[in-house]
Amino acid sequence: MPRLGVTKKKSPRASQLSQLKKELQRVTEQLESSKRELAEGRERETATSEILGVIASSPTDIQPVLDVVVESAEKLCAANDAVLLRLEGDSLRRSAHCGPMPTLRGPREQTKYQPRNRSRPCHHRT
Image 1 (tube, rainbow, N blue to C red):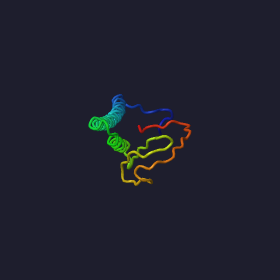
Image 2 (cartoon, one colour):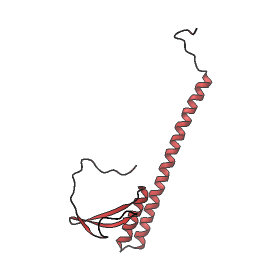
Image 3 (cartoon, rainbow, N blue to C red):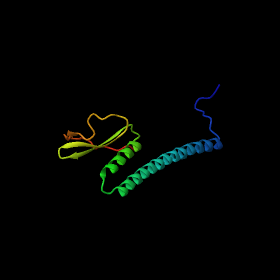
Image 4 (cartoon, one colour):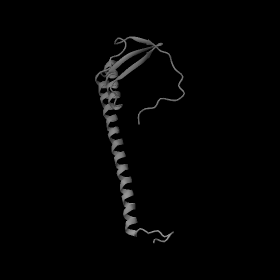
């Protein structure tokens, strides 16, 4: 019959092995996180490079720049569609579109802009 209040101790070697396993798991998770961050950084750098290339090749024409900005945003956000709207006076004008979703209005139609009070700021994907 086992005695009450008596616990079996782990051997020092088993304790070390358990600690090593935990540390290995922590380091592996940290490595995977770093790999993801590096890949995301490379994606942003590639997108920035593409945008700067278009700016350099067409310094007087803004449309190709807006198009590549929308394409880059779609890729970076892993979205199915992206639309860029510009505020002109009190109207929003669709300036660029990328993706399979049809837009509700014609290619360059304008929509009346009505600002909303935001209780919190917009955040980008992390």
